[in-house]
Length: 239
Image (cartoon, rainbow, N blue to C red):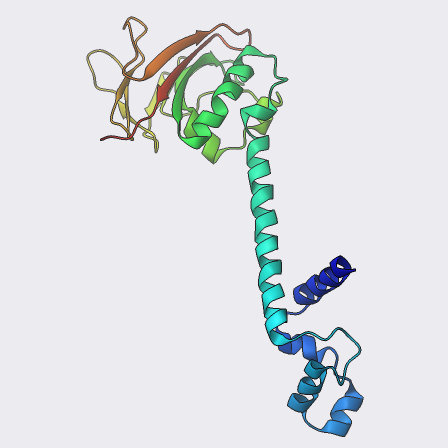
């Protein structure tokens, strides 16, 4: 019985913006005609002498109003967290393609900032032109919906707006910094990327024995692309 009353009160506080609106909803035209005073009519409703609805004091109305708002925000936050989890690798265990599985394994760490992965991809675009480039995975996750990639409706390919891009047919070459990396193009040892968080340098030269501190290089053999390499960097704050 108490739960039913609470539910009814919750409906009341969500239906009316203010306590005055709640009181006014129970005042009839006959009340105003005989009392000739709106404020007096409100007081009689508050005391329970007028109105057919539930008697609710101002303090109780305000308290339940705040509780209802807190409950609404809590549900909204829980839904947001659930949507975030649905986009994480925990919900992608059924993925079988090697490339997509590799993306899923790194997704949560890149979303949380524990890792920043650079993906090198070499393949052909929709026009049949051979392209290659380095993608800041964490940045792409924040600026793009990856569901079409994970469901196979779209293929992940480098773009001129990524860290580095090269079209082998048109000889078009671009490089762009991201929130995570600075591009060092003019370097004798080849292309370098500097992590903006811990200032560590990541080298993508396959001849180098290591890509750098706290970094690993993982070539991936997959039929969907000509060449794929993952450069995973564990980020640490500069001390």
